[in-house]
Length: 104
Figure 1 (cartoon, helix red, strand yellow):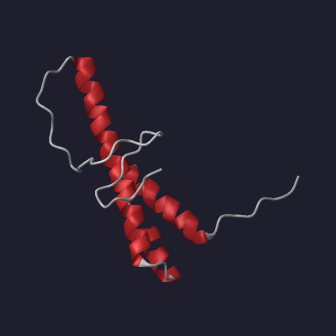
Figure 2 (cartoon, helix red, strand yellow; figure 1 turned 45 degrees about the vertical axis):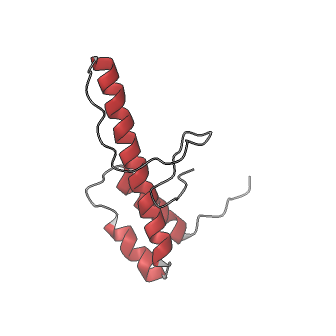
């Protein structure tokens, strides 16, 4: 069985940063953010990852709230969105971020 190459440390840090943001981890990914900056990753790439992670987190919260309201039989006015969904979801159900980043 051949060994698979390890992920580059910048990829691991980006994934960890995004997962921490999406999961609302109390450390907020600040350690990974520091590592990424030390590695010299362009700020626009870091910003894109942060935008996508926040979008996924916020979208998940909205869907969870909607499912709860439906099961609870709540008849309430729609809550204002934290982000504007301008395009239709893709085949995987992903909507782009307000900045146009795709999350899938």
